[in-house]
Amino acid sequence: MSHTASEIPFRPTGDDFPGWSMPPSVPPGMRLELSRAKLLEAQESRFEDWMAMLHERYDECVATLTQEKMALEATFLHQEADGSWWMYHLSLMAEDSPGLVLNNDLDRAHHEFATQTKHRGWEELQPRFLLCPPSVRAALEQAAFSSKDS
Image (cartoon, rainbow, N blue to C red; front, top):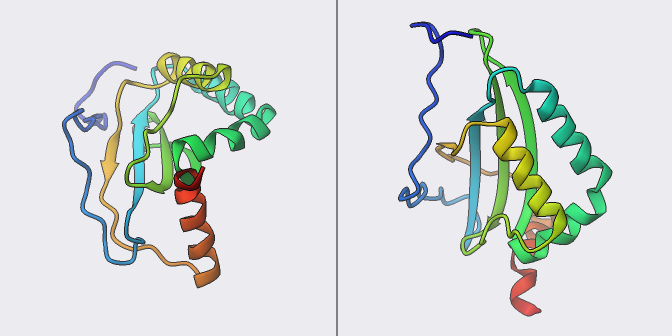
C-alpha cells in the first residue's frame, strides 16, 4: 500500500516515554496498558502464524508471566478504514515489570515474530478506568506481585 493522505499514521511512543499516570481505579503498584502497533505491509498471515505459535505453546506462555510480573495479557487484531492492519495489546502488570525477558526459547521466538510482523515500537493509549469484582482484582494483584515472594 502506498502512503496516502488518508493513511492512518503510526506514531510510536519513544523509548523515553515514562508511561501514563494510572487512574485511581488501577491497584497501587500496577500498570494498565493498551498498546497498538501497525503490522508491516502484507504480514497478516505472519501475524496469524505468531498467534498460532503462542496458542500452541500456551503453557510455556503462562510460565513466563511470573518472571514478567504480568497479571493479564490479551492481543487483538483490527483492520482500519484505510485497509491497514493493527495489533492491540492489553496488559496489566506490576509497575516494575521488566516486560518481555528474552532468557528462554519461547520469548526469543515471540520477539522474532514481533520484529518480522509489526513496525517497531508501540503507540500507548491513555488508561482511564479499570473495573472488576474484588475477587478478580485480588487475583490480578496476586498474579502481578507473586514474583516478589519467590
